[in-house]
Length: 146
Ligand SMILES: [Zn+2]
Image 1 (cartoon, rainbow, N blue to C red):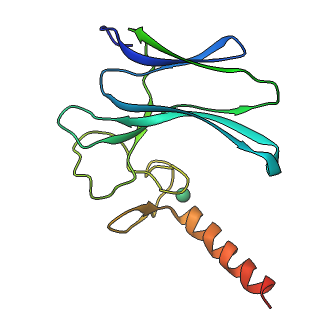
Image 2 (cartoon, rainbow, N blue to C red):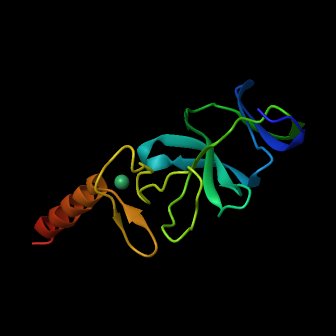
Image 3 (cartoon, helix red, strand yellow):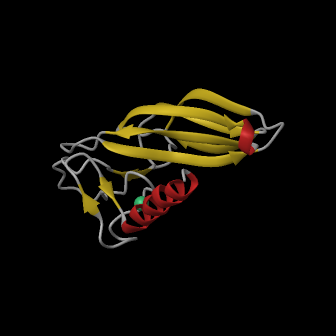
């Protein structure tokens, strides 16, 4: 909860409020509806970035929810004091942050607290589970190309 009214996105699905996304540190807020017809799946994501005071920018996610056929998604610009705090993380290992925002796997968003043995390059971090998954994908396509 924040004390001063700031521009926020209020997200309603089928007339029910899901989140008020925003806050004084919010830099950008995107509300995205994605449809995957081949998978018969729809997703609503409210994400963007926050700029903590005197710290590098961080990724922010307010909502990720599955949608079903017939769902009505309403996105409303509001001035609110009741913005929900987002889940924040960083994927850039070069960000010289001194705050507590966790560095996460660029593929699955898991942090150092959730998985050990993360591998970092200059541009991204990846966890051992995703390395294993990618290993399996590469080797299954080897078998299929024979
Ligand atoms: Zn991962």
